[in-house]
Structure formats: structure tokens, C-alpha cells
Length: 123
Image (cartoon, helix red, strand yellow):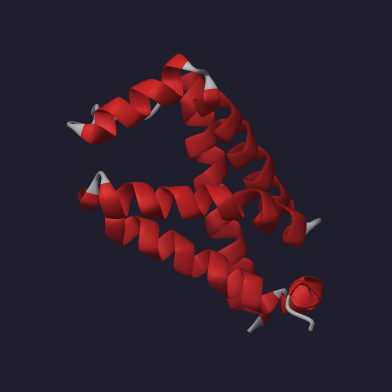
């Protein structure tokens, strides 16, 4: 179980650090989305909100990679993952399988660190 947690934590952290850095360095070419997804992405870029999300991705991913403050990293990445899932579910369905895999990794890590989140579900 510990090895699976380390693998999931490292994989999720690496994904978010790489794609967060890609927002600034553009080393992975991304085809522009079409339709409503393009309008949504245009609004994110024009308002510079996309860079805030990228910083959160880098910070959360780095915390996961370092293995320190993993619950904080998952807390930072939680809203980002929710938005990725909703974006692909409603605007760009082509990326939905990868979004589901990322969400599954995050949920596994939340479950593995459930003692840190226990206060959220106490009556």
C-alpha cells in the first residue's frame, strides 16, 4: 500500500508540475480548443487567471513530489482537478479519460491521507 501511495503521489505531482510549468515555458505544444472550450480558455488567458491556476498546479505538484505537506498539496490541487474534470465533461470531452485518471489518483491519495481530512467529515 505504501508503494502504491508513493507511485500515485509522484505521478500526480509530476503531472501537475510539468503542465503547470508548461503554462509559462510552452515546451509541450497544445492544439487550441474549439467552440465553447476556446471561449473559456480565451477568458482564462485574457484575464491572466490561467497563470494563477498554473502557480497552484506547480505548488501543489511540488508538495506532492517532495512528500512534505501532502494534504496541503491535495487541498491546493482539489479545485484545479474539479475544474479539469468539469471542463472535459462539458466543453472538451476528448480529454475526459485522462481527467478521470487524474481524479482517481487524487481520490486515492485523499483516501491514503484520510486522517488529515478526518476533521472535514466529523459531525
